[in-house]
Image (cartoon, rainbow, N blue to C red; front, side, top):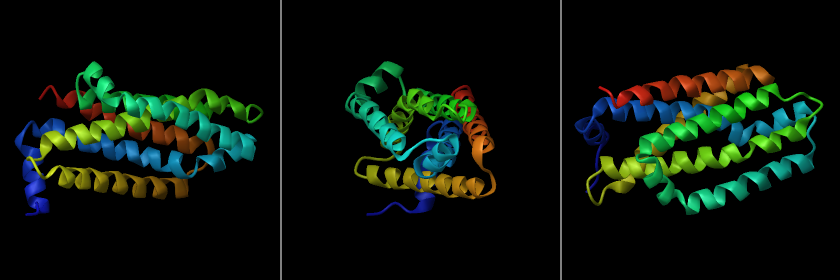
Length: 194
């Protein structure tokens, strides 16, 4: 059988609903920011004076850090203790990265390479935590429904991120996105205490 939307909401609200809603808010906020970094960041690098070669190097650095993080993600999840902590670390890495972008002088675009490893932490931790959270929310055999729900939340976040990016540009955009992700992560930090 299938789980309907109402059943998904009931499952999320059964065990620690405040923490679960906080997780959804944080994931949504993170993907508001991730939408810009995933799709529009090369335009910003061009603004900084970066070349096509530099953009290619950023992808190389990012992937070199992502691969081992995804490989060791289950170990990292155990080390951090929970998917909640893992998402918080992913949000922190995102904020450090984009705030760093916003302070790089136009005459030094290659400094972005120092921040690119943060993308590996953000994406590996966010996706790994999503898998772990969906697994705890859903009954056996319905894990893919949980993944579908979280994928929808990520996609809605990306949609909102693109709308924001349509209005803001350059350094201001990255500072606003870091504030959104920080604000989204705050309820997650408090959600376990209610």
